[in-house]
Image (cartoon, rainbow, N blue to C red):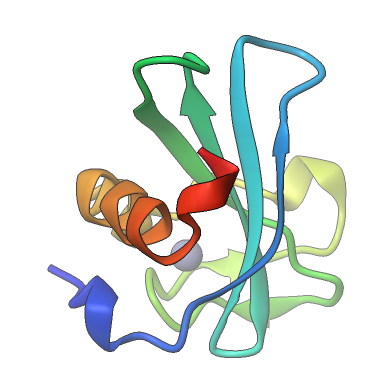
Length: 98
Ligand SMILES: [Zn+2]
């Protein structure tokens, strides 16, 4: 399990999704960008976390090789295991966005 609280996670933008009822968060961790999808604008639940890398790199969390193309932006399986903790982190750190 990742210790979410001990990671240097920083939200870039938190915004209502254009494509579903929920919230999208772009955040940085270890110099890489990730996208976190959260369902339901009233009673939030975490959906998934994808890599949004700008250049080819090994993800420091799940160790996958990530390509800098839309098809290469798979789910980050390590963040997937920690979705509730990640949601709680953003709700506590950025309460105004929820
Ligand atoms: Zn990953």
